[in-house]
Length: 339
Image (cartoon, rainbow, N blue to C red; front, side, top):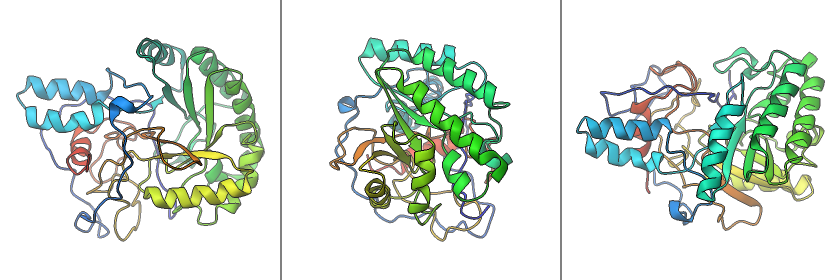
């Protein structure tokens, strides 16, 4: 639907690709890939990042598979993804095993775990990433299990991408608004009960809700006052500068709350010309600034790779289902990256 920026993923399946370019476009909006210079990223060498790198990610497994096939050049490019920290999108059935595995690895490495909680009832308005918990009780149980599994591990949790913006844009039915805001608020409280957990409520991106003031009241109803801040640009392609400006406007109206920005795929900005589903597997995009907490902006706590680069946005432009690993697309993002 117009203005809707993107779905995200819950799990990824390993695939071995035989192609190295992103799938060709299927609509008139897909002009030649943009070659405009990317916004200069901050200094963010992986060694300087405080966040955990998952050695079992789909990107890491793809690197190993390509090396075994003698595709060393492609494997080397894909290390631009596999050797960078990415958020773990926690399963919607039992969150415990995945979180405990990751938390164990993060503790051993002395790093911070980045997690995405994406299981709110009536998720994604029935679109590509539809699903979520069966109801309020199921969601409370899931968030409780999520928080228990995190325990005292140092963690950053991005809470329910889309959930608040879909209230603001009317995509989520009005009958579900009150319950959703209450569940989000309870989730913030539950997660913040863990002494080392930071929580950021999702606030969409500048291209989705043009007037950021429309987000402030529902964000506070969703628990922003107790959260560490809000997240922007999750799974989208808006430039960092646009995110910083947009976030600063929300922060000013939200008593100085800080924010994080998803830079996973915004190295060349959004698809030129926009158009229908321009958020869904757009061609010619690139990795953005590497994850770091050294942003140079006092309001921006971190640049994070919340969307896992290489996971499909949905079955558009030849892609697999939302959240499935798509090595061709991953390689395209990595090959166009400036770092």
